[in-house]
Length: 210
Length: 210
Image (cartoon, rainbow over all chains, first blue to last red; front, side, top):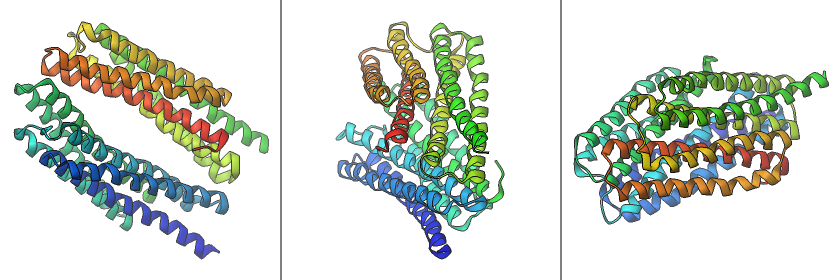
């Protein structure tokens, strides 16, 4: 019985890692759809988010079931509660990638983002995707050391985000562009924040530090 | 022993209700600071958010302690897990009110919001505050019927949010204004979303419906 229990506990970790891969890919593809005005890819990202939502629902149901049946204590209890919180972060990251794709779809066949801001957006996306993939490895390896380095990458996203506002203010874009860039900048920033939040939860899980 | 346990469980509900009051007041005051360019009030809202964060940390610690010590099943387990999720929503609502206050502070002594958009912002804030207060009553009374009505008010916030973009596009505001209004509109919209999320969790808690 205990073996099945620990297999179930492990499988929750496996689902979390699967979710990190899906949201990393979603952000990558949403950005390609945005910067390439690719309607088909935007639609694909929007539909694919259902899978992330389904994984979260399934993970949460399994976690609650384990809590009810096994009444775990100490480390296992902390693992399950932390997993529920991580799955909420990851689900939200999926939503944010979908939001990016929705702006690409809304503006199609136009480009939402002016050409001279593509590089900044692509860089925010690159770091965001990397953060999501690293979070998967961090969960897999219970890797506190790498988890601690994620704050720095998040700072880089924040700097890019602020620079984006600077670029908007220094140019003469239409108001529609200012709105789109402001929202999209926010989505990437929040995506990175949630990745760091997952890393912090892993640190808490392993070390008890808050 | 069971009596102390149920008192502890009740006290978690009391803390949640206290948090709804604090975030409702925070949104009200942040909006007054924003529309009145009131730096002192903005600072007050920004500092006061620490109290919401502290309540969340305290609630979460008590909830985890109950889980570990009492190993609750069925209804009590669901209550505790739902409380953890509600406290996360409420903590985020506090952050969003603080974000509004930070824009007021950033632009002081200027007004972040042009006069002709004040009414829309005030109305989003009014509904947001009302949602937060209702959520407190809903938790207190386990009031599923009222909880179901919150979606409609959230729809009203979404309509106001869309109208705000329309107003931005139809006028010739500076880019800085477009950025501020876009972010602020998003903060109110997310505040209302989280209130509805708490209401949905209450419905789930009482009825088991998802």
